[in-house]
Amino acid sequence: MRWNDLYIGATAMSLGREESTAEAVADGRYPAKENEAAGFLSVCVDPEGPTMDLAVRAAETALARAGEKAGQVGLVLHSSIFYQGIDDFSPAAYIQGRTVGGSGIAIEVAQASNGGMAALELAASYLTAQPQTSSVLITTADRFVPPGYDRYNTVGGMLFGDGGTAAVLCRGSGVARLLSSATTGDTTYGDVQLAGEPWSDVAGGNGWPLNVQSRVHSYAAEHGAEIFVDMVQAAARSELETMERALADADLEAGDIDWWVFPHNGLSLTDWDGRKAFGVDVSRTTWDWGRRCGHLGAGDQFAGLTHLLESKKVQPGDRVLVYGSGTGFMYCAAVLEIVAELPDATPQHEGGASR
Image 1 (spheres, rainbow, N blue to C red):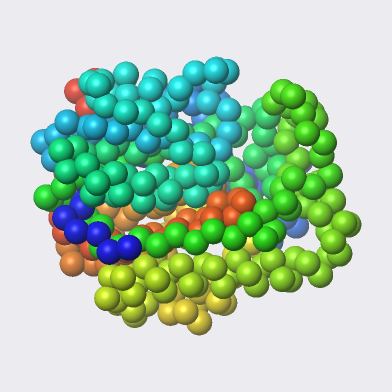
Image 2 (image 1 turned 120 degrees about the vertical axis):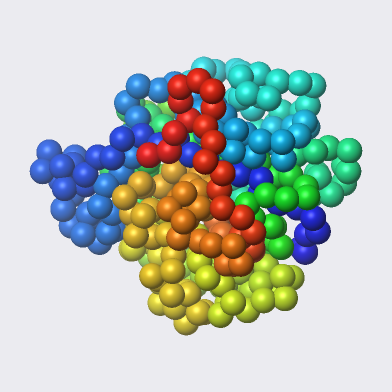
């Protein structure tokens, strides 16, 4: 989909403190062989919470940076992977009430690790269909803490980091113009994260912490280990096809992209060879930074973009491809053109600073 007159007004993030993976290995919390294979150097940890306030702080900063461009926010979209702190409440409404207020709509987008990207495409569609709406606030937040998660062992090849992110999508101007986006769904291997566990009537009914790795092993036992070859190849095809469509809709090729933002997945879960063949220069990705954060749930993409903007690695005129994927599976890519530097603005009260 090619978009017209849509801009990311600003982005922001609020991340936990950095915990070295070497420290976790020394403490016996993280197997040394897994650390070497995945390639993470550290992970963001927020032991205090609440989770929702990570999103609120990021949103406050993004709104302050966007300034008048944010206008009257007519829609708040929030995405996450894990527990948000209290049962039976609306995280999106909580964020709306503590940031923009008003009579706009607040909705959760539950698309796992691809939630932030799915929210971006939904926000673009909403603004296109609702010309009277000035802007959309998108947030993500997760804390992968006990007893629910063992951030070092719940999923092989992945470390889970704590943090919140935010982006304001608006019209007219901003820090980056949204040129295009594309999304692909493929449920062929979606049951890989269901195998080996019975349905439960309550969260944690099969015990804590979550053990996704055991489900993967059960899936292999049921279908044969060779199925993972087909699954990895299918995921790689979907990734490249989705990026190709987004680039084509922006009238660009891979060689026109200056920076790439990918999910913070470990090396053992990432087909870097396929990406290189596609035209991705690893040194022009955010992996060197992302390997210090861990996988931020639905927020890797907005965090990576914020890092590029805050560090001034991107300049006006640069083009950025942002890519995400989520279990089930769903793949999404968006192409941006940087048009301005990120404003140096913070909320009036304490909070909201990036790490």
